Length: 300
Ligand code: GDP
Image 1 (tube, rainbow, N blue to C red):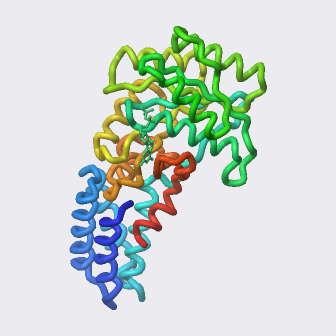
Image 2: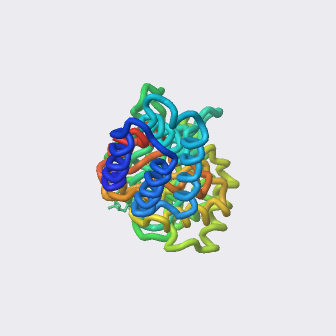
Image 3: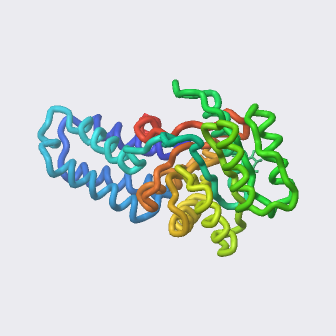
């Protein structure tokens, strides 16, 4: 993850730190290199431009260049700007409501939505990160893809999280209603709804998603997108957020994404925080997305 960006930035910063004094021209040269590095990592052009302008302005505008360690100060400014770009105030799931809290999962087909639903359920059930263990129920509303409901049931068995019994022929809104009823009656803390995937942003399915959201009034609507699709992932997020009030994004396949462009641009372009990163096919391959840690990883 972020390997080549990290290498490129490391080189730029070593050169900056290596000098005792820095001129404005040194900073501008370094920032041109940062801009190229960001674009090579597939960061959206306006985001890269804005980032570099902000850092340059801060670095040449303050007393940074006259300080004892100007190189280090510039690196700190870059770090802070990176944390902000990644969404400094990002939070994990907000489930602080009278139970059951509903988490609705949406996304394109093949993005990793069903897998991620089970991963998050497992995490909540286990109380990862010192949180209370939650009693979780999962339900698949995907009546389009054959065996989608069975796939979630199989994953449920694997992660030891309950799934709503399948009633053949039932439609998504009715399944959502039944799931909510079951979660209330059986004292579940969290209900996770895995909605039908889409091949692309298709109106009938968008309408179905809105109808489900109206019934289930989710606290969290998480969009699952494949980080390997780069800026397309950001465009998909933009499209979805125009249709439903997303509370966050989960980026999957970060394990195979050497560039990281989607992760770097998502917040700035869509305004939506990345809440989790999928890092593999296994059920525990999910990390909470912490902007400061990610920035730390990038800047080494
Ligand atoms: P859905 O159609 O969106 O529900 O997608 P699935 O959950 O069925 O996932 C499609 C494939 O992607 C499966 O083979 C998953 O194991 C795989 N997958 C999901 N998330 C990740 C991830 O973070 N990393 C990797 N390497 N594979 C993933």
